[in-house]
Image 1 (spheres, helix red, strand yellow):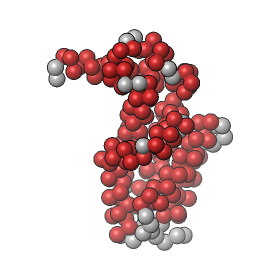
Image 2 (tube, helix red, strand yellow):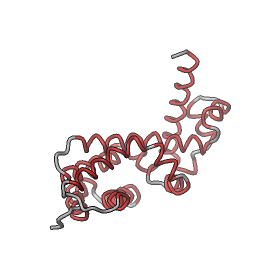
Image 3 (tube, rainbow, N blue to C red):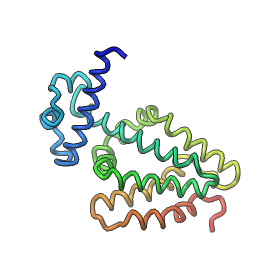
Image 4 (cartoon, rainbow, N blue to C red):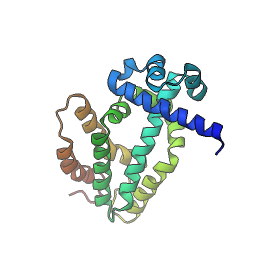
Length: 199
């Protein structure tokens, strides 16, 4: 890789890391161009060169961490032998990720993330297709085996992830949910909602 490209990638990393630090310390309102350039030591011109705007930087930060979260969820599925153990692994991987990366969890469950999903859902699906395909294939295999109910994939995604996202949001905002308890309870409850043979 040419030195100029290496410097560019290093600058991008500095800006993304600084943006997350600023967000963790000052919240969404404090995530400004000036705050990020001050925290990163990178010039205003470089931020605009690499991301176009503070919105472009925040979108890139969201996509970076969404990709990591999806990667951990897909990795959890790879080791599951049955649909039921797959649901358990997926739910626990999501909850563990948020518990271990609280500031990232705040960002991924923020109104800003919701806005990005609402306005750019098609683009997000396209950019994350490589991460989402293994989940789609996993669901398809278990539907064919008669383990998972033959429901539309978006509905299965909602049934599996909806309760997990809701639990994480409550843990991040009000703190009245214990994520370890959620990791024990939610997998079986979620499994019942998608099982081909409800218990």
